[in-house]
Length: 248
Image (cartoon, rainbow, N blue to C red; front, side):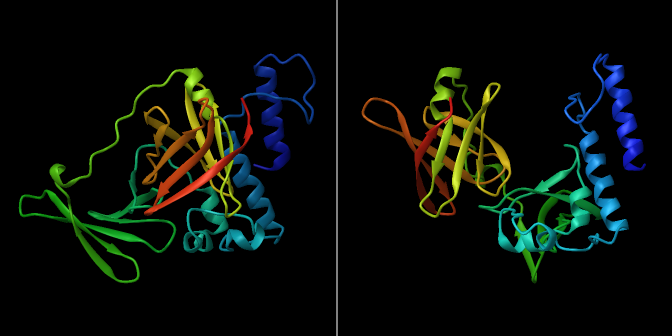
C-alpha cells in the first residue's frame, strides 16, 4: 500500500465516523493500531529510497534511542521496530532487567529478537519442565524454583484518586534524568528520561512497585504531608530524586 492509498483509507475512516468537516492535517479520528502499519509503511518507503536499511542499527538513524541497557540498545535494528506481539506469548526477565518477549524455534527452544539470547527448557523423566539453559556468551543452567523458593510477590492495593494525585509530577535524579509520574485513569504510570512508560502499582501508601522489572519506589513527604521526593530501589541501589514540578 502506498502512502497516498493509506491516506485514502484514513479519509474513508473519517467519513465512516461521520465527521462532517473536510479531512486535513489537523483531522483527528480513531487510528488505533493502524499506526503500526503506518510506521512499517513509512520505514519501507525510506528503505526503497535507500535512506536507511532494515539491518541498520536504530542508533545510527536515531542516536537518542534508548532501551534498558546499552548492550541491548546497540543490537536493536530498524526491522525490529516493525515487530509487535499481543499478550499470547512468553516473556523472560533477569533480576533487575526489563522483561523481553521470547519466541519458539523448536519444542522447548526459544529465542529473543535482541541481545543474541536463546533459551532451552529442560524436562524431567515425566515431561515436566524443571529448568532452563540460557545461551548468551556461554551456556548457563538454572533449575526451576519451587513456590517455596520464590521471593514473595508484593501485593497490590488500591489507592483513591486524591492520594494518587499526590505523586503526580516530575522528579530529577542527581545524574540528570527526570522521572515523570502521571495519572492515567485509575492508576499511575512512570517514565524515566529516554525510556518507555510503565505502570506502577501501590503496595502501601507512598510505596509502589513495577511488574516489568525488579524495582520499587518510595515517595517521601515533608512535615506537612506534601510529596517532595521519590527513591528508586533497583539493583541494590537507592537513588533519590527531589520533586521539581507538580503537574496536577
